[in-house]
Length: 231
Image 1 (cartoon, rainbow, N blue to C red):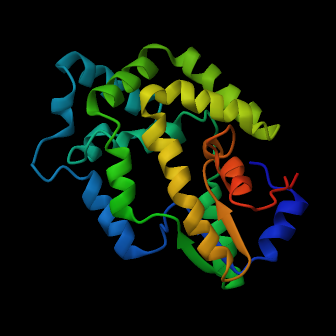
Image 2: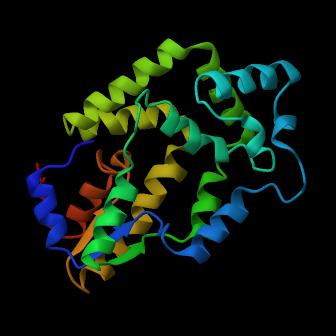
């Protein structure tokens, strides 16, 4: 977890915390949960082969210390966030979103989002179920490789190396990078511009959105903004 004095100063000078999605809004959270819930009644287990489900269940129990059965009514996409957090190989992984939200509430700052839950669900729907299951099974069978990948991400994050983070993210997303990164970045710029007219805004988005020619930093500069790194 990286948080410097300059970051803290920038946060304290802000009037609003703006996340990718406002997870403090219960209505939005409800829409999101509805979007990842399988309303057809199909059970999560049916997306796996019997052998895959047996191995995944054991992995959840032994490595993630949770029961996969509690996610039975959810779509496979619901597993993505769980696996991302649990794969950190850390006793108490910190969530920037939750820490920033707690600080914003203490400061009585406004909290908002760059996209609503319906839009977020439509975006993550680009990740098909087979890809998610394949990713999970790869994690089950190649734990050491997964830890190595996670270590690379964490090292780059600690070094504030957004170019490496974006490159790794693109490598993982393959042909889905347009929908999950580039298209969203482009939509966010006019929304960010409107928000910045209302005061000092602290935007908090995934590091994979920041770098390269289609990243938020380049797009903001192309829109006429001066963007300077806060180290």
